[in-house]
Image (tube, rainbow over all chains, first blue to last red; front, side, top):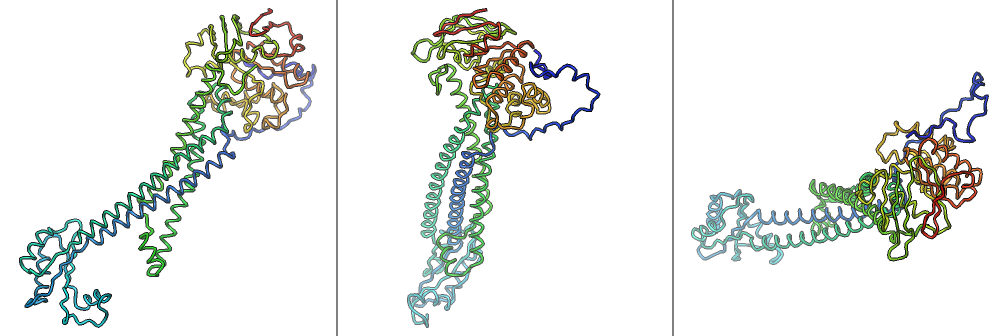
Length: 347
Length: 219
């Protein structure tokens, strides 16, 4: 079928007879009208879209902050565990007739014979006195008191020695020696660290669920303002996949902008806290903050997590947009078979 | 081209809005669809546009039974039908040019392949100077012509127009009628739903009159 050609055929638009014959006259040349660059089918910015971007930015900021927090707590807990399990102590109690210095040397040498021990240092009188200072005060003469002496043994964490065997050997060679591998403390700290990380993960899960619901509902809200576009596209013969693609593109842009803003802000917060901490080392405030929260370092894993959170949010928004558009098209089609679903009844 | 046989439509459990409609719309034909308010003109247009399904009866369109066409194929069917809505349904954030080009855009065509056609069509409907204008700035008649141009841009086999002269003054109504006639002369079947007796009297065309859901046809 021929499409109507605009050759002035429409009634009332034909040029008067003679005009064509007057062609030799110089025609009035008007510059051809320029068409603006084609706008996207879904309007790039509207109130709902901007509101959605802000919601996504806030939710991704909170989610990334929680994720970074959990990653920080996990690192701190791991560091507690590592610090305490890096060393074991051999304690030698004084006894009548015991040559303490000889016993210390014997126990130290014995400890060093085990595979997995790196170093063993006998704590000298001054260091022992410093340890007892909080209880017994200064100016302590250790020779006057039956004070146990300590040997600090540094062990290879990845390949620790056989403590049971070491303990048995020590008992045999130096009966006054007692090996403390800090297991009780390590177990308690490990369990505390695990509890802390679990609580953090639970909070993270809650924040993520809240984020998912907020993003889903905000996306659906933003889409409801565009329902008329879906209808028009549907009626001009657009396939459902085309319409879904257009909206997906639009919402992917919005969500990437929002989640990038929120994620970047959260990452900057951690970076700023880290810089502050490293510039105020050994001050009471920093020591307190470090004791409470550990170091404000989330590492590459944390930053990677923040990046992954941004991607998850973007993906989530895009999928929600697609599903909502498909549902809207479904509703339009349901009206087709059940006109009672129509907002208004036609003439 | 389109064949209705004993078609009926009701909303839910209510009475039938359209009853026992049996008629043909031949290719290249021109007809008015008229009747009092509430007679079911828009509903019949929606049936013709496949945006409603009949409660009973058979509708054959382009040699295919609509009942047997899967949902995914309906967009292809709608591409062969142009529709001008009573409320125009232009997208306010797109210019006149972009609105008219929309059906081609959704078919995945590149702008370079249709730009000239769209501009020529816009000139043909008298909107050559309004290509970059957004719909809220257009007058009622201009919106109507933009909606018609959008319906025509992909050379549909049939054009359905719901009250196309409802929002325009008599000279503009005359101009639009001439446009439809020209289109029909070039081979497109035209169905115009209207109340406008004056408009119908200007033309010796087939009249489909709906009264209380029943259709009488005067050739």
